[in-house]
Length: 488
Image (tube, rainbow, N blue to C red; front, side, top):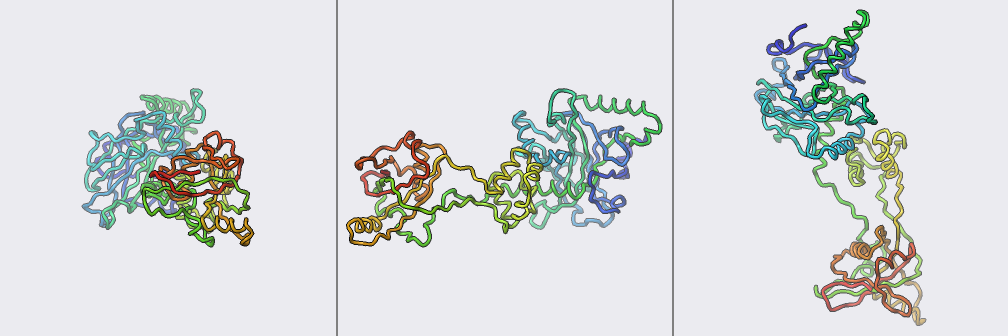
């Protein structure tokens, strides 16, 4: 067998490029000269059939060299000559099922292994890398700059093992395969490394210390016992692993994830649960709190039951079929589906709404899939208690008084706002009323309810818990003497 370690010191290796799962590369890709070549210095398994992708066994926590080689022809990519490029190395899932739930899987691993990383750079052993970084929020990713014209080797350590992500853990189960993927970018005019040059990956399995050596030995012994005709169906074991160019699907998924991560760091517009703007067409001056001429003044409001009919419209923030892909991304963020934004990058509102329940569960997993499907279909969980409140203005009060005395017409119109309560506490009611009328909760010291014979009863948690659902109240206002606001 050729000593590939010696050969590496000379020309770039011309090993075969094995076809990956569901390859979308053009037919002439086998003869294509790639700009870079990445070589993982670990032996491939001999128990892999011809035309299948190579599989490499690694030991947990052991440092493995990845050689970063410049494979450009003369005059190719002259814009990076004499300049640095950025490479991002990540460990990702090979199975599509786990790719769709990657965020949940990694969060579970983080919970079970606090303070640990999935992927690390062994900086003292590495050669030629500049500005190495390991983002604390991305446990499976490291990045660095390097000069293609100089010798560069990055030593990596993988700290998770393949059996940590198996469905059932009864002992003896097969571990899930991972992928080591490298994405390389060049600098744009703004000095940011965002222009993609090349992506390549290889399939690995990670074992506990020395477990990879035992597995390699077991595979080799099994192959030696096979008949010569059977051996011809399998690949030989190479002493190094060549990372092969990614298929279109794999490349786009992980590169989009990188850009989406940058996007997620930017604040998305927040949508308040209650609409504080005046109701159109109903005379906003009669449906808002009176303006305080003196900041030390405060208003006392009386909460009175009423039986005035109402019409309620609830803004559910549903995703519309006309939503653009960007608006769909914002909707996913607002509804706590950020981990799946990269999967639905090019989906419009119509595309998302066409997904069946089975489609969503297969993509997002059972828990988040059901939640996303219900959100797409507008299935809102009913609040524990709904009440309707209306601020009675001085003008409306005078009109009502005239009507009661027979001096006016009975065309007084009241506009009600819905308040949705989950905790059923006085504190929650205070916050919701303050939010509804755009005031600070600190301006409200107490809430009273008008009881029999006009008495004022202090509103407590127990009283709220005994409110009837969808009951209506009117808020009365009057001035007080302290610098807080009371509600009666």
